[in-house]
Length: 102
Picture (spheres, rainbow, N blue to C red):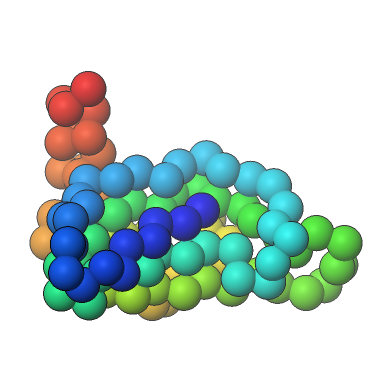
């Protein structure tokens, strides 16, 4: 699960994104990467009910990395995403905005 956007000159705002119900294995210990522009944050990201384990390595945990990403984690999320900064909306408001835009 990755968001990559580090181009400082042409920053695009990413917001109201839901990652939900993903489970499986990761070939890398770093399983969740939310790397956004340093100048324009990713906002209102929801990470919900995720279970990503390291393939071929029992007992070893996966990790996460965030750069200027704001949102909430809900339910059981493995790996945990303590690097996710607080969102300006709660998860219900974010999910409502996502479903309304479809």
